[in-house]
Image (cartoon, rainbow, N blue to C red; front, side, top):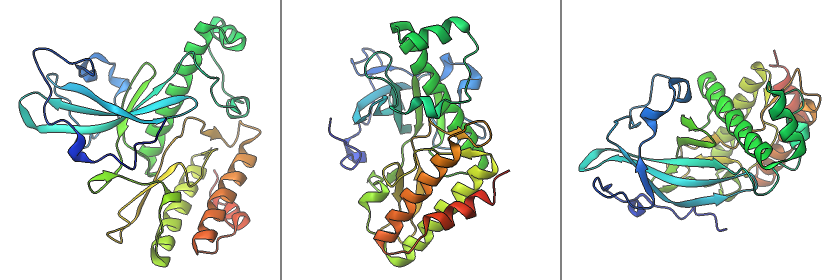
Length: 284
């Protein structure tokens, strides 16, 4: 499935939603129907649409992954051009392919409270896969809320409803922000981006957390053309605890190596082991 992140433009989004007869790709906003704890942390950003009269319009697939699909979703109030926002909708699958080929390592130390659910997940039954999808969605939601609250640059988490997470869509001008590996920053921009990365990883370490799958493919960059690059970390459902997960150090070492390798190839010499030491110095 093609990745449309780099090709979407705001001009592609519909400007109105239809009140009388919703199209197949539309629904009433789910904001009012979810529990309060399933909404993003306050204060809510100015761009967030919370009106009960809003309609959600699915604009199409952005990316198809092993565990979830990401689509663009516009939330707008019919016949009112002002309150409108485009968000990313991440929807975890429940029955297709197995989630995360290394999920045993990522979930080490996690517990499922319900014994029936534990057995179902272990058997990989249809119900178990549904439970597993919900667990991964909830894990990503909790990670996004925790990281955003701590100041780590992640998309703002708007809401979670079952296995669907709505979050801030990271744009770059009139188009989607590229992934780090797609950019060609100047030396000064590389230094800025690396400092943002180091600070983000150090903040996570102070929380006792490790991304676990950090790479130039799950970091987005906006503002390159304006000489004000902003790095945003995405895909955080596998966030692991440094204290309880026995593989956490190995995951962190791999994260540091992946990022150091890319920065070095891009023109900024970065030593992965040095980065690891700088991050661990902030742990706990």
